[in-house]
Amino acid sequence: MSETRNARTDDAPASTAKTPHPRDEATDALVDAKGDHVVGRAVTINRPAAELYAYFRDFAKLPTFMENVERVDILDGKRSHWVVKAPAGKTVEWDARITEERDGELIAWTSEEGADVANSGCIEFRDAGARGTVVTATIAYDPPAGTIGKLVAKLFQREPAIQARRDLRRFKQLMETGEIATAARTKKQYDEEKA
Image (cartoon, rainbow, N blue to C red; front, side, top):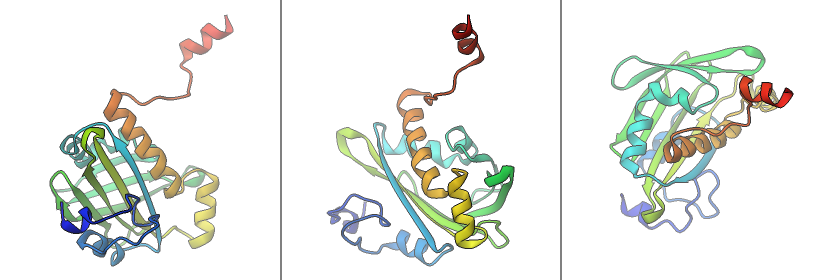
């Protein structure tokens, strides 16, 4: 962990911090990459950073807890193809490239040319002692159709700020309990209630 990170007095993601974070390489890569809208969310997960990093780094597993991600196809060690649900039953797609990676600590990415949604971001895994690991996701993106597209996405609950919070909460549940809680009833439960 860098000295800059240890000097932080505010544990919030850079986009929501009350005190400005010193810039570091990951922030520079994110700010200089793609996207005008920045979303930052964090959650503390009671698991070691190495375990969380390893699960997250296997991008093909991300649809297990990311509600709007239909699939992630691995193209090579640094590139992947994403298919994500969008409003009105549509999907958006892009190829992403890892721009920085520190084993057990950080994964930063950017979308490649031709993306339906230009985006970049990073996910950080910081040791929180006996509490586990603070996982921080910071995402910069350009919504399709600009501000109007962002409003439409928000209406359909497909806006990245909403999804980042939900996805991190599901990641926490999956890693701490082995399953994701849901309010949905199974057919068996529904039939039992009707009887």
